Image (cartoon, rainbow, N blue to C red; front, side, top):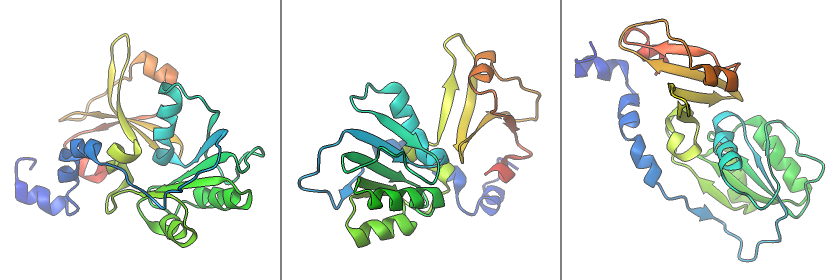
Length: 214
């Protein structure tokens, strides 16, 4: 079945395999900031408001980069009390319709914070255009898990002392590990991964369940 292109096309009407094959090109996508301010105000703190994979890129930035400003990721409806006109709030939602992110955007507006929106469409892009907020519009028409090149939702994990996980995915703040095999097998996660992500369950993707997963 996996060698029959007609069967694959019938089971994969949205061309998920084609999207996966083209994912390296996502890394070359150049973001364009619309409604950029000519004279932005002073920024003393930075917040990214986003859920699941829409906050993962911020998580990586906070972990890997040497940031010179206080940087916080918010995965709920309200912003911290310290938010003011010297706070940059990045409202991030791939769909543009995540209610927690929309709530944080409204909160940021009420407090006079500086705002940037990142989304593929939805209410966030509509609000950005209506209210002249700076925004970056991501390519649309994909499932969020297929957009890791832009929003950083998925990644490959390898431990310093060996061991690897084929795919780690964040969705709505929860972690899920995946291992890819031709046939179903009992697989054990690397010990260091289990210690770092104790609540991340493992799912083995194989030839009998891959279509349901896609």
